[in-house]
Image 1 (cartoon, one colour):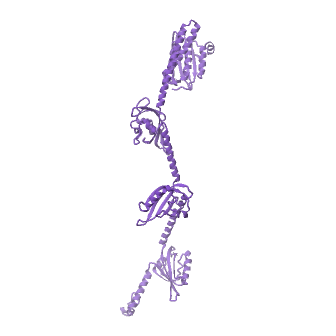
Image 2 (cartoon, rainbow, N blue to C red):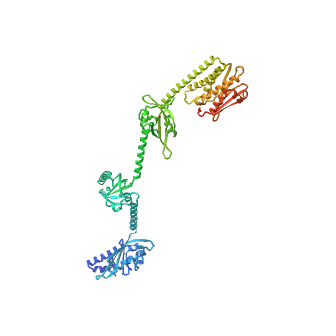
Image 3 (tube, rainbow, N blue to C red):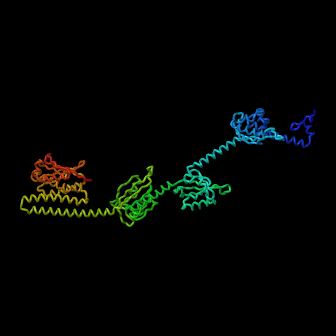
Length: 612
């Protein structure tokens, strides 16, 4: 056989046979060949099945999808590779197809591959019938949709989660059209407004807005839908279904298509009623506080941590003579104001009470100073700066109250002048009385009367000496103990005859209250007189006087070098010692006498108003 005789065409037919076919017949053979190639290499799986569902023919893609060879698939049932949970529905539909109830059906099902993996497949099954409608075979076209299914499931899950988030968000969310009609609302929107979902979907967002706030919100929304802005925020009042008015914060934004055309609006809303009420309460409290500070007769101002003035009342302006420069820190805020100490010495700005309070983060209580205004007038004041701290205890500023004490200073000056005048007159009157008694003593012819007048004159002289100390002290409350002892001793010494000296051996630097002056002067005079009479020999000798301080009392001591005496016996015959005992009791103390050697008289007394 020659090479030509044995040659075959590409579809397997002998070449000599093809040569005898017509052109139409050859074209038909070529078309079938191409269809077979297309069938085999189609991108979807194709299987031809009989009435029982057994595979009669499969293509390469069907093998690839199922993971099985052509030999493994041929003759096997299409339901064998199907997931058990999907088998019944596919079988039911296939039987309907065979029975002629339907011409085709589609189904998504799971296929168990040879390697055990499970994939999702989209299957379309149709029937091929003869001219009389009898079933010949079925055609199943299927493709792997696992990735698409997973993506769809993920998308569905995401959409469900978004829907759940939207619905149960703790903030009200609604979708509205261009006229503000509510298209969709979540639970929080219903809860805030008090309306049911069905009721809200019959309303616009402006129907539940307070009339006084409606116009501005409508105007803003209309401009937004027209493209004037993507988002705006507003705080407004909302009228709930039950009639209660609440405050809400609304953020309005829009959703547009690719061409920028408005699709719908999104309104996010939250109830800020409690916060609004808190702000109003705080503002009211601040207003009342400022009114209170303005009404105070004292100058009050506050600063930040650097000393810049953050608030001041009118009294502060009046005291300083000018308003502060709030941009400057420290006392420099009161540009032309000068500070001085009470004695008139300049007070540096960094040493002012407020500067100390800020620098040392502590209160500075009751510091007195002088403020000199630009016109030269000086105002005495007492400062009370106190640091202000935040919740963490950090210094954030200070508040200072300046109390103008001009009237008090003037009152004290007037009081001092009156007291000086009173002391001066009392002193003069007592000195005049003392002089009259001394004159009467010299003029009387009776020895007994002369002795009485001498004692009286000496006692009045002691009281006059004490009054002189009070007058010179210039203090309405206390006097210096040493000045007092020196004055009374000098007065008593003038009445002594002979060479008798008085020595003050010890005396503390304390001040005694004025209430003790007269009783103590009479006690000291009597003890000095008694020592001069009985403790000095031949008119010569020394008397020692001392004052000591204990824990809660003082003790006056008078010593002489005489023979001493028994207090009990001497008190019966000497009226002066009786007077001393009585006055000591008046001062809450007592008189005691010791012999060691000579006489040592002690008077212990309590001075509740004593000060250093």
